[in-house]
Amino acid sequence: MEVIIRDSAEEVSVLGAKIVARLVRRKPRCVLGLATGRTPLRLYLELIRLYAAGELDFSGVETFNLDEYVGLPPGHPQSYHFYMRENFFRHVNIPARLTHIPDGCSADLRRHCLDYETAIKEAGGIDLQLLGIGSNGHIGFNEPTGSLNSRTWIKILSEKTLKDNAALFPTPEEQPRHVISMGIGTILEAGHCVVLACGAQKSSAVKAMIEGPVSSMCPASALQLHPRATVIADSAAAARLDHSEHYRWIEQHKLDWQKYE
Ligand code: GLP
Image 1: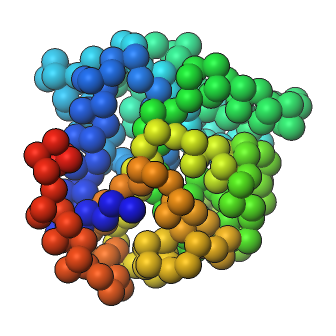
Image 2: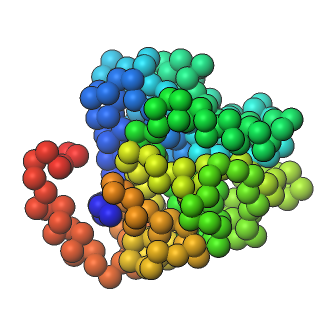
C-alpha cells in the first residue's frame, strides 16, 4: 500500500483531486469509480474548480458509483443519486448517459446488481476507484465480516454505520437498512484504488486497514492485496499508525515519475 500523510483534510482532498485530474488528462476516456459521504466533498469541489478554469475536460469520462440506498428514489435528498448530481455531475461535463449509480428502487434488485457488474465490465473496467472509509473499516457499504471476494449485491448495514450516518437523516425511520454496494471483489479489480481518510474518528479503521491483518473484520484491509492502493490520510486519521515515519521516508524517496505533486 502507498500511504501518504498530509497535515490537513484540505491537503488530502486537493491531492486526491490531483490524482483524478492526472488520470483524466492522460486518459480522457477513462472510467472513474466514485464515492459519496462527507469525505470526498472537497475533492469534488476541486475537480469542479479545475473544470470551470478550463483545465479539465470530462466529456469522455464514464463513471460508476460504489453504492446507493435501497428504497430511496433519485430525487430523495439523502440518495446518492441526489448527492452526485448536486455535488458533482451538474457542475461538470460528464455525459449523463455515462454516469452509473446503482438503482435502489429497481423492481428486480438482484438482477440489477448482476447487470451493474456487467456494465462495469463492458465499460472496460474501472481505472481509478475513489474510496472513503467507514469508522468500522467498511469501504463502499461492505460491512465487517462480509466476504472479501464479494460482488455488487444487496447488503445490510451494521448498527455502527447506521449510527455514524444517522445525523444525515431527519428521522431514524427514514434511514434505510439496506443498500446496493459494489463488492470488495469488484473494488479490487479497479486499476488504482485511492482511499481518502480524514479525522480522528477514522484513526482506528485506518490503522486496521494499513497495519492490521487482512481480515473481513476490517473490509478495507483487503486493499493490502491490491497491486495499486493509495491511502491519503490527514494527520488526525493517521494518528494511530505505528509506521508513519516509514511512510514519509518512502514518499521522500519516490522517483520523479512516482510523484503526484
Ligand atoms: C458511507 C459510504 C462510504 C463512505 C463512508 C464514510 O456510508 N457508503 O462510501 O466512504 O460511509 O463516510 P464519510 O466520508 O461521510 O465519513
